[in-house]
Image 1 (cartoon, helix red, strand yellow):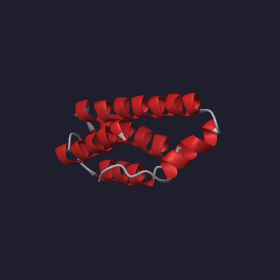
Image 2 (cartoon, rainbow, N blue to C red):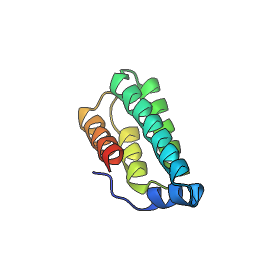
Image 3 (tube, rainbow, N blue to C red):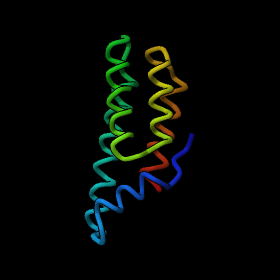
Image 4 (cartoon, rainbow, N blue to C red):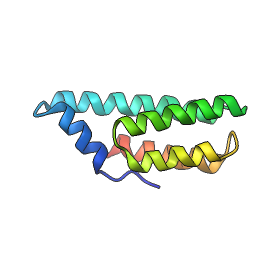
Length: 100
């Protein structure tokens, strides 16, 4: 599932108002937080660490109304720790967001 502009960008734009620099800063902060959680998922080998990273990811997604990311976080919550398909889809979302 690739990143598609929508509610996430609208939420960031609403928070930034007319301030383009603030929008860029918020977008960067979101990308960095997302990258941290994806990295934690990639390195998780036990249920507890995997679940915690997936829950944090879901919280991040929910706070920014990122429906695609919420769906990916739910997928991670249902997957086994280290599931490469989930991590790959999350990385693709991050890559698309960071370069979009």
